[in-house]
Image (cartoon, rainbow, N blue to C red; front, side, top):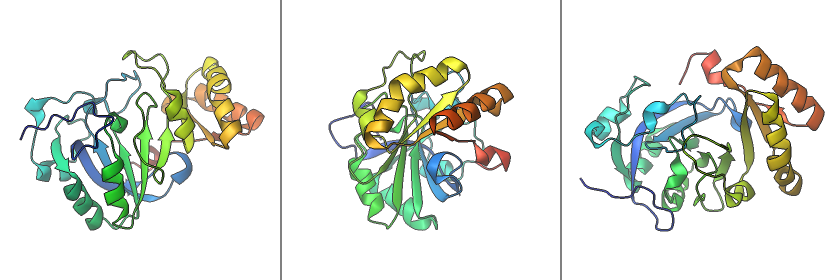
Length: 235
């Protein structure tokens, strides 16, 4: 099957490269603890050094597998993926008991997601999309958009104002004090204007990063997001 949909932004895609689908709990941000179906897209060119899903970066045709293999995948480091169309992903959603769907990656907003999101919502599910903010988020008005802005990453992509304006929440990785300054300068104005909550996520849950996040949360009224799924050893 040849499906050249990589990088679509203005034309709704019917096929999507999917790395894995699985039921778990949302471990981060405002939906922490919520049972969720995760749909993880393959492909990302942002290049975050600390990324824990680097296996989703390349869309290597040599790693193309069947949908059944993607659904049954258990090894997180696998870079295998399969094409799914909108109806096939709707079937995956229908079979999940979770009422919340997280479309993540990779970078899902390199695709126009509006048709997919609309179809998933018709199954009675709420849809959340997680993005780096470096692509225009074609997600419609009813999806919940989590923007985790990635500035000055090796991929060279720029965070887009239209993504920040559309965000329903910000989730910012913090490793050093200058990251707090970045949040103040670049995200706080949007938060003040739209009431968008800001979550600080300490990189690698290090003591230094966590203390920075806690201090800033107290000072500026922000929140701290921990990767709780890692604490209880689930995906």
